[in-house]
Amino acid sequence: MQAGILYAACAYAIWGVFPVYFKALQAVPPVEILLHRMVWSLVFVVIVLAWRKQWSWLADVARKPKVLAGFAASALALSGNWFIYIWAVNNGRVVDSSLGYFINPLFSVLLGYLILGERLRPAQWAAVALAAGGVLWLTWHTAQLPWIALALATTFGLYGLLRKTASLGALEGFSLETMLLFPIALGSLLLLASHQQNSFAGAPVSQQLLLLAAGPITAVPLLMFAYGARRIPLSLLGLLQYIGPTLQLLLGVWLYHEPFGNVKLIGFSLIWSALAVYTLEGLWRNWRMKQPAS
Image: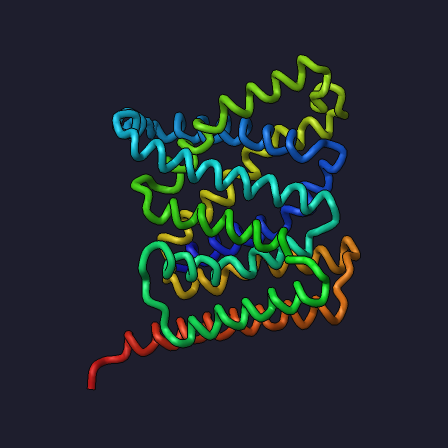
């Protein structure tokens, strides 16, 4: 269990400092960063699959069109989430992107209610209402929806929903997603190169190496998370997931000096209150279930 905590915490910490990586690639258009992330992620997972000799699942999946369609949908949701996040970071919106990942757990609960027919307990409804209040507060005082946060929460929530109902494990599922994205990504990079619009060729060596590193940087925390998630209770995993957006928020405010005035503080505070209600109710319910019957 201690190893599980360490791996899951490290995965969330790596995700939390992603802005530093993408800021270092600020000279590269977000679409190109996304395309390189797709290509080099597949290269990395193929190396991992070859090392583990883990290929048997591919033949089985190839005979199941519904499974392929499901993973095509999750691949689109994941790539959409990646693009929005890369664009937000490189346009000075790290704080807004952190809000999306704070909202995400509650958005996932709401998706479970709307799509899977899961019943929400009163405290969960209260948490969703508080989060909605935070979004409405930010919308009212900034005269626009916090669209980056909502788009990130929506795409990642849909991705989580699709993977929740999928039949493959973390490594196999991510491998299939990148295999499905690879032809589009490689074709797009070749098209850009034919029009002399590929930033990779003319970039400094340091930037080229950073783009090549997109594969392991993407896949390693995912595999660490999968390893950790199998070894620790879901309630503990739920607490650890706030490491990522908290680090992103701190980076946005203290390192990149993004504005975080009273309006945003109140909006974030409402959402943090929602997360506190949601998390504490889950911990209390988990504790009650473990108590011996009197």
